[in-house]
Each structure stands twice: as C-alpha cells, then as structure tokens.
Image (cartoon, rainbow, N blue to C red; front, side):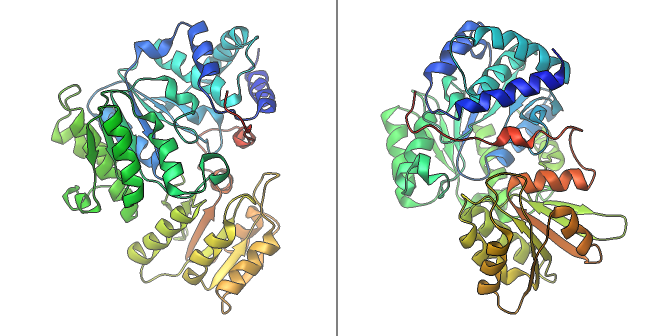
Length: 422
C-alpha cells in the first residue's frame, strides 16, 4: 500500500458519514489491544478555542521534557496534522502501516473516518510511548469517538452556538453534550461563563463527584507577557491551560520556567496567525467560522490593530451562520472580497457580498473567482485579513507557502452526520 492508497482508503470511509456513539470506536480499539489503557490524557471539549488550548498545553508539557501526543481536528491541509508527537506530524509511512493494520480489524464494523482516525491516533501514541496525550474532541463530547478514554482531567473551553442540528438548539443542550466528557472523580476545568451553561457543567460535575475549577476572564491578568497569540480570547485559553496544569501539578509537576517557555513558544496555524511578507504586507489568518469566532476576531482587530483597517477576504460554508458573521465583520473593513471555499458546501460569493453590502453600505465589496485571485487583487494592501472557513485558511497556507505538508487532503474534513447515535 502506498501513502496515496492509504489516503484514498480514508476518503472511502466518508461514505459512512459521522455517526455519534461509542460502541464502534470501543470495539475497534479493543481489536487493536485497547491502546488507550496505556496512555494518559487531557481531554478537551468546547465550541471555540479547543485547538488553541490543546496547542498551549502541548507546548508547556513538551517544554517540561515530556513526550507529548497531540490529536486535533479538522486539519488545515494534510491529514497528518491530526496526529503529532512533540509537534512532529505522523510520517506518511506510519499512516500507511496503521491504515493497513486497522483496516484488517475494521472489516466487520464499518467505522467512520473519524472513528478510524481516533483509533489510529491511540495506537500510534501508545507505540510512541507518549507520556501524555492532549486529546481534542471532534464534535460535541458525550457521543464523540474520543470519549472512550478516561483522562487525568477534562477541559471545557466555552459553549456557544455551532452545529446546532447535531448538538441542540439551546446553550443548555449544547453544554450537556460537551459536559458528556466528564468522568467519575476526574477533575474538570472550564472557562465557560454563561450562567445557564455553568449550571449544566456544575450539575454534571457534581453528579460524577468530579472537582470543578472555573477560570474567569480576570485570570488573564496573571499571564506572562510573552504569549505569541493575538486576542483576549487566546489569553483566556492560556489561562485555562495554566489552570489545567495547576490541577495536575501533583501528578505531572511543571516548573514556572517550563510554563514560561511553553507559553512563549506556542504556535497554532490559522488562528489569529500573523504573517509579514518580504514586501512588508501583513496578513492575518483566522478560522472564524461561527458567531463566537467572528466576535473574537472583531475584538482582536479592534484591540490589537486599532489604527489599521484591513482588507477583508472572506469565504464560508453554506451551512454556517454566514449572514450573522458578515454582519459582525462588515464594519471592520472598507474593502471586502468574498471568495468560494473548496467544498461542495461553499456559500455563494454573491450572497456573501450582498450580506456585507447590507451591513456596511459604504464598503467596497467584490466577489472573486477564487482565493488566488483575491490575493492578487489585494497584493498592494498593507494589511489583509483572511477569515471564515478553516478550508479557506488551509488554502491560504498553501498559496502563501506556509503549508505544514505538501499534500492537499482538505477534502477529508468533509462529513455528514447520521441522525441516530450508534
């Protein structure tokens, strides 16, 4: 089997959609020796900030000398981004081996792509003898395939509206799904703030006798000044990570020096990532794909770049609340270019442009054929912000020669969910 054939097999798993339930990943993990039983985890759920919080935790524990596994999704360009050890992408040869071995075990179970990838990660991390795994949920938490592990601590970043068709149409329902990662006696740390959300998390923690630590926005004032991530929300993600480290200090001690080093060296592609080109042009990349993400981007632009209005390049998936995102972002720019996303689910660029014009009638709004054309049209602008779908951010990284890998596998992020959990 070649790497291309392994990736093609993974594409084939998309026919099974994205089912919610733990039976299949448990069976598949058991068939490969239950590798999760050999590992220690920090399990991270939430609406926004999961990836950034995971990246910060990984950086801190790696700075402390641990061998750290990192499992995240979706990927920006290459499937290999999802499975990393000490921030090294899993090698292509290991993808081939794992697909070959787990495919044999999966013959009778029809695992979905995410279920299969979850077990691939577990097996790889166990083989790599990781000291700790930073383990991000895919969607929700309670019925997410990642929930077959029992972690050292459960982390819930925040709760906002996203994926309502699967997680529920109220914050309380969404919070209940995210709080489904809470386990008996396992500490919980959260930065969620809404009273109705906190009530759900507190009740779940109480019912499982799980000690709960709340991280308030005021906690950010104690952070070192060296955090290289823009935005107040990233400071809150860092404070959440630090509270998690504190909860685990007796089990996994980390010095203040290692914490400072970890914070100072963290990187997370495509989330308020600032790039400066040789000609002096600044480009900000941010996957603000829901209302809460757009609000965080708007706050970051207003606070961190108060004297500059960027040219805005925006593309979104049609099943997102793109009209609400357009309303939030439109006042930030006098020039806006809408672009398609490389997905069958892309929002129409003309409809996006009309939404921006409605929200900001004085802005110059155009629709480009693609991101490459938009970048060419904006090459003389001093500051450009590219935002919306993470698909678009992945394409931008490729066009800007910043891709973490040389293969485009963004299509593996496509999924449809079944209506019934298994």
